[in-house]
Length: 134
Image (cartoon, rainbow, N blue to C red; front, side, top):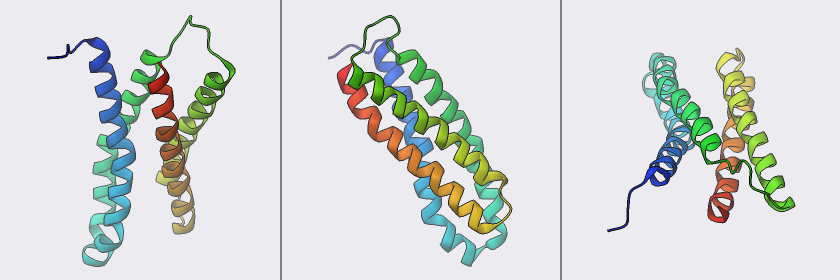
């Protein structure tokens, strides 16, 4: 059996948190329209309940991402660029979701929610080659 060491735990926590942050947003989007039709009064409480799980997952993503960062190791230009773009997308994802949360108009909620999700998907996509190269 392969060993389960601290690196395996770190990567597992990172993947689990990404599953919650990114996958949870996708599931929530899929459920919103039917929920609005069936029980419109439940939309806000369900979104708030998701936030109680999503924001800690986002924090775990940040912590495990920093924990994974190869400090003190020389990185080539492509790796530096990929990390820089990924970090920008992570920040944009968090900001987009915050702005979505506090937006009053439905159009702004939709715009910022989309920004948050697309940025999260982009960060997820860039995380695969980063992880594979480390």
